Image 1 (cartoon, helix red, strand yellow):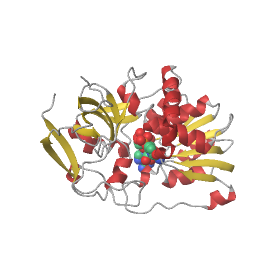
Image 2: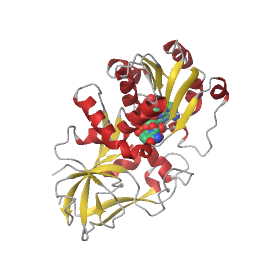
Image 3: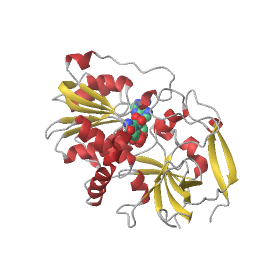
Image 4: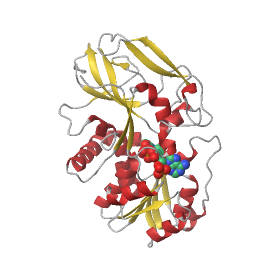
Length: 340
Ligand code: NDP
């Protein structure tokens, strides 16, 4: 075993703004022993997600907040390194809420419920957390089930160069839509059109971003996949067509703020926009279908993906801010250990 301690980030205090190392205790504890029917898993990759910030707060949310003193919640991929369970074979890869720690026990009676990934994965481990993992699934179900894009529709996605947004845009292209992405900076906008195949990109950091948005959506917007909220969402809603659809996936522009996010509702009434908020776990019973389809598209080169990988568990609390500073392209991950 590579590490003889289990490094764990435990929540020390709730942030009021940005996340920092001061919000955690970084402890070195004994590696746990798996009991009967249990397995010990070594974390290999951690998925950093905007929702990490939500879980750290005690706002009304879709899961219980992380308690003070509890290991920081986080998705990840790990490898079984010791097993007392026929279900978890040594060497197998597992995925789920591994937490911000080197080791986690799963199996009978353990709080961490990790799913075994099949042998011979069609994609590498980072992609299993990104385009073929929960972020890809978020894009797949949010776009196809809630936005219901039809051929020729204009689909708009915000945070478009990120993990979810980049997949949303590419699925919409596969469905024959006119796809517009909003992202921060010329470089990310170029990536959207040149690499991910979007029809147009709007740089919300440019002074004329609202004019860019109008120009990029000459026929209005039929589907909005909303990742950002605030001013950007309001400008998009003003461009939405009669009986258009909006999947409210996230509102990252407000996560570091204590103030509630407000929005102008009048376009919803005047344009009869159908808005549905969702959390990817709402579609859990169809994850198999989504993963198979995403893996096929990735294998066929129809969906391109990027990952931004930060080395070292110790860097998780600072790396998570890359999501709020726009320093990631595609899926943001922390590499904790190499597989054996
Ligand atoms: P991303 O990989 O998209 O990273 C976040 C991106 O958001 C950044 O790269 C940045 O890109 C952009 N951003 C950050 N702050 C702002 C801001 N103030 N204004 C505009 N853009 C901003 O993260 P994910 O793909 O993991 O998540 C995207 C969204 O989807 C989030 O809102 C998240 O909460 C939500 N989500 C929801 C899920 C669900 O089940 N409902 C599941 C997964 C994610 P840029 O450089 O362009 O600013």
